[in-house]
Amino acid sequence: MSEVETDYARYLPAAREIAMAGGARTLDFFRSNVRVERKADASPVTVADRETEQLLRREIHKRFPDHAVVGEEFGGTLGSNEWEWIVDPIDGTKSFIRGVPLYTTLLALVHRGRPVLGVIYAPATGEIVSAALGTGTTDETGTVVSVSTCSTVTDAWFLTTDPHDFAKREPELFRTLNDRCAATRTWADAYGYLLLARGAVDLMIDPIMSPWDIAPLSVIVREAGGTFTDLAGAANDLGDSALAAATPELHAEVTALPRHT
Image 1: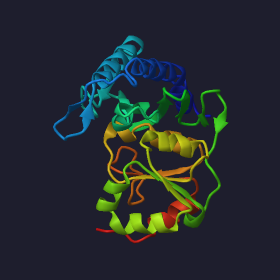
Image 2 (image 1 turned 180 degrees about the horizontal axis):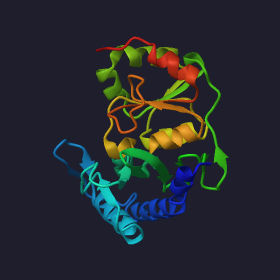
Image 3 (image 1 turned 45 degrees about the horizontal axis):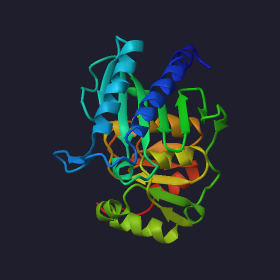
Image 4 (image 1 turned 90 degrees about the horizontal axis):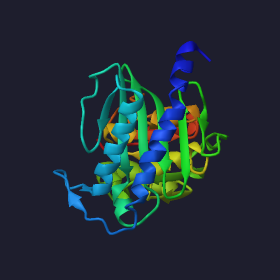
């Protein structure tokens, strides 16, 4: 392990603690009929989202006062600091407000514009996967996890967060994957990438992403042995889409499929 990788790894214990503290706060509101508001883009938001992000920000500033924080609910400017934390207090708010336990709390550390650490924590199930560059990906027990060996679309279990939106944005690609893959499942959000890192599913695609959605994912997937790019196949770790595959062969097959443009 290089000196740089060791420096990133030293942030992992604190990052896991912070994410778990935020996740614990979400459970105070989970299945409690919280009032749902709508943002300007019509996406839902609750007091749980806001209070959890405030807690995450406090915990980060307490430990790393010189680092910047960018979050879904209270903003921030990417590129404003050499060290930046990107937080999503509740990734999967639609699941959260319906009482579905597959939402997550996300945390990423970005150094000079590059994600170098990621945490996905599912508070309602107690699952967590995390990684820094060079560490491998570990779960809630500290066990190193890895992706599956699936190498073909016909054998792949395929997840996407919103199949209706995927089919609207990429009708040809979605139809092909839905027809050819061994299984298609949803209720995903970042929980799908957690499952992929653990080897439970093989392919996860989101055709539209925000920085706080995508920031932790590349490090976690790659450190688990997977391939992570945007939907066009480019290694854009803070891009606006995500394609995570268990193997390079599966990734290559998917990126070679026809797309609607």
